[in-house]
Image (cartoon, rainbow, N blue to C red; front, side):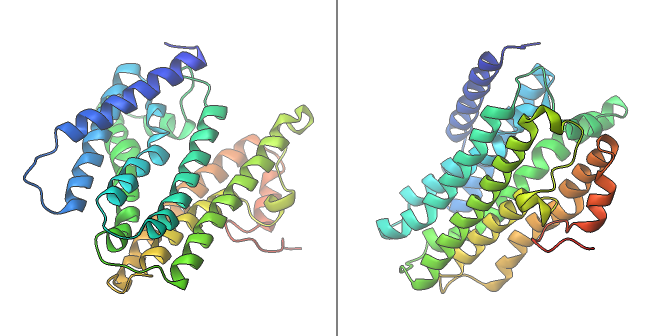
Length: 287
């Protein structure tokens, strides 16, 4: 097992570069629909990452994929779009800012291949066949499809003749501020954890006083921001709302409950905090 953090990160970066590059080369030239091409590219890269995680016996190799994969996708769309540079910047800058924020978090917090996310470990605590099924479909492929679905509204911005409107400005700012929210929440939590006196205690101050998962609220806001940006195009149908709603469901019914359950086991004061504090939305705590 590779224990050195820098070597682990360099190996991870190399695997990702090769995965996206080789996956792109393998794409059929006959594909006309650009989103089908992107989806196949996305899935191919996921399969390569999965193979790497099996070889390294650590599914946390997939962790950065959530934030890294959208960057080549949005850049590819922008480069193949005939829309104005201003429009491309208004859409791509919040997405690249989001990706940089998540990747920075990964660089700071990931300890290397000696560590694997507890959620992945829990999903693989079963028989060998079921564990590998959960690993491929639950840990790798399912999140890829969710991200792919939530990025789909971008097609209505980049492949149609769309003008820069006031609504696009507002949507771009909203998306950017959602990333600011999750960044501030993460920094508050990081500062709290760095104090040895807080070990085993619950973070219930600042933004965390009003929400148990303000960082997740910002993440969900980001994906709704992509939907709002797409709606600035007159060609975008409203049913695209199902894209960010899929992400909302993932956090409400999976990520948040899993984090709450872990905190209940590890922090004696979390039950009281959980009863008083909103799961996601910033709301005054209950008396």
